[in-house]
Length: 481
Ligand code: LLP
Image 1 (spheres, rainbow, N blue to C red):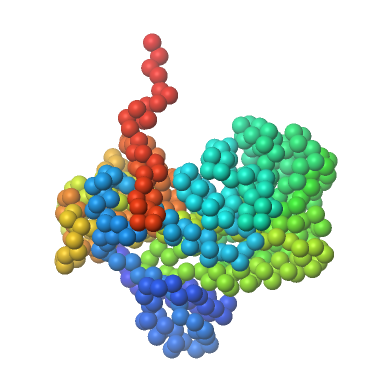
Image 2 (image 1 turned 30 degrees about the vertical axis):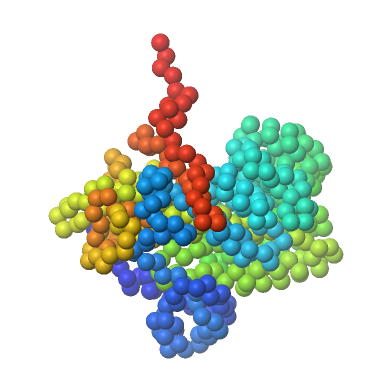
């Protein structure tokens, strides 16, 4: 089925965001780029809506010849395509945006490449790990599992999950890692192996929200966290093994909004009341959205921190000691820093539809196929020069033998077209905001080798992960005699 992209809907969404933000009497930091004057005009005509500051919304161009100061065509020629490129300075900037929190704990599932982890650490953040593999990555990138962060007083690595597989339990016990328990069974299993441990409990507050139902991590339909009505039971379990609950954590979903993120504050206060004086750290979880479309806006970080800071202060007062406030973003730190560069390998028509087919597919970037996510798409002419080109409606897809291998689709698999400069075979396409859950979710489907990754820093482009080879693809496989 074909649906033309509906501009109205984009505006309706931004208007809704705007009104929501109005309820919290905001607003946001001006981060350069253009602001949607038309929305401001519309809003100023609406009654009872205060616009206290200018809304910050990037505009995404459909032509792009540079990335982080380097020529896109040059990067593609030098390193080959498909290619992930990252702007290191952007990651450092996003960590700095969150400096008001006592700790920024990077959810490395968004992009766990060692060089990225290293730069995150150097910028003063600590890290979250969901598997033994992620723990080992964090160690390899130099995080101190016990005493890290700017003041050296927090665990550099926290294992956060809903289960221990046997390997991760062994590793956590062996290294004495701090654990954020997402199920009562985890308390029991850790208590048996490491009586006297200090833990954090991840609480499911009974509600959640995400950019897609698949990224909503709260409520009865979610498998995540300890159900908010089971806290007493968990405390008895902890007592049985001398385990102390020193932290509480709530992560209600990924890519959510200020309204939902803020609802968590009240739930947190209530749960701290149940656990009591042993609590020394609260974590807001991650979930901070970033704009993927022109018209979408940044979250008001200052306002978000203010709401949490007030919550933390009330909690500190009621407990009689200072409580640390952590945030656990993945997407916010790396999404905008990364792009996927691909080459156009075929341009074809199917009836009235025009397809640009790339050498990158959902094996490289699965978000559109998995959630119907929108990524900015820009054309870079083969010679790297900006030409005036006529615009056309195009469907952008990849090389995989599957009809869902389309970058321009909506949730539910409905293919849509995008208004783009006309592209020819040999031109490059830049899929923007691909740093979070891009390479990290890539696969070898159709026996495609995974892309190379390049980091651009101080004007230099360096390979941080080599392109996979056929040897990598079949490593570990054997044909029995
Ligand atoms: N903390 C926990 C416990 C999480 O499960 C997650 C994400 C985060 C923090 C970071 O969330 P963020 O700040 O990145 O929203 N693959 C999906 C996103 C899945 C998120 C999984 N958990 C996507 O591509 O949108």
